Amino acid sequence: MDSLITGAARALAAGDPLAALKWVALRDDPPALALRGIAMAQLGDLDRAKALLRRAARAFGPREAVARARCIVAEAEVALASRDPRWPASALDAARTTLEEHGDRANAGYARYLEVRRLLLIGRVDEAERALAELDPSPFPPASKVVHQLVAAGIALRRLRAKAARAALARAERAARHARLPALTAEVESAYLVLNTPAARLIASGQERLLLLEEVEALLASSALVVDACRYVVRDRGSVVSLARRPVLFALARALGEAWPGDAPRETLLERAFGSRVADEAQRLRLRVEIGRLRRVLRTLVDVSATKRGFVLTPRRASEVVVLARPVDEQYPAALAVLADGESWSSSALALALGTSQRTVQRALDSLAAAGKVQSFGRGRSRRWMTPPVPGFTTALLLPAPLPID
Image 1 (cartoon, rainbow, N blue to C red):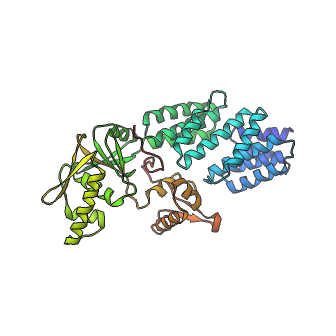
Image 2: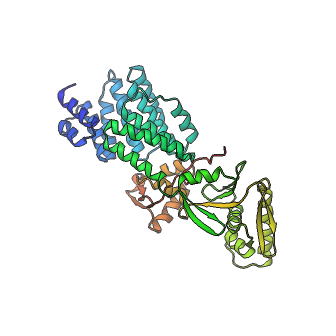
Image 3: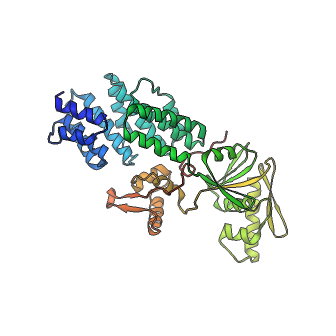
């Protein structure tokens, strides 16, 4: 390796892409193309970075399998940064195998971390947790140790384990100081904001207040019956009943939970569940039918009793009934939660992350764009959507992940 390539590589390792480009900006040999691609990625020009890395991978000969594998790993990281989870995982896995066979354990480990981060990005938390448990960060360089702890913190946040998330971020902060890379330090600081800003709203006995993630975790472990409007479930300490696919029943459960310990008037229930303000006999009959269904679904958790003016909840085991709501109510919370990371997403990548169809995502994006909450740039397949984070709020409860039952 010549002195120019060595100088550029050292500059990139120190987080100085401009200095690296001064060394190799005018060169088109494969090592220089790869380093230029990494430099452009660090500068934020991800499309140019991806093109340079692909050119470098093609230019390396059959005897340079390790160099080609490193380019593929770098391209996978660019795809992750550009929020393109559709990038073929098989190519990354093949590159990781090549690096392991040739003894490049540091880059092979980093390839594993990229796959774990991809799984977390698209909401496959169980798989990400299992994959992370198989990785020992101790032999890896400081940058990889930061990534390990950031992923661990991300999993803990999705699981609503605030103490574990804080511990992981503290370890990430120490590793970032040791690595002396400003970009990693900034990423750790950004993750800390999630723990120090409101995560949800508590509605109880007619009053509301904002909760931090630790308070949400404590609420879910308490003796209260929680009507969770973030995950569309009703739960107490012993069991969880999902109403995610039954929006009418959940609307009734939330209205009854907000009215507890009093009863909810029939007119209020009709409006919340059916959007109707006319309490004629047909609507009242419909309400009785849905209340009967709600009573059967929640029979292990709560009883739904009729009163003179409406209906009231009577918990079977819980000491009180509360409603856990989003910090701010939005029509498409899941899409906004994913876009709140400040990165640009394609509609197909959003559909993959949210586990829904691209047509459904496109309708949501069009509605949010009309309301001025998201914006797009580009055309056709290169069209991307983005929005700045909602100031003062975290979105951990809105992201696609299972609600902890334990």
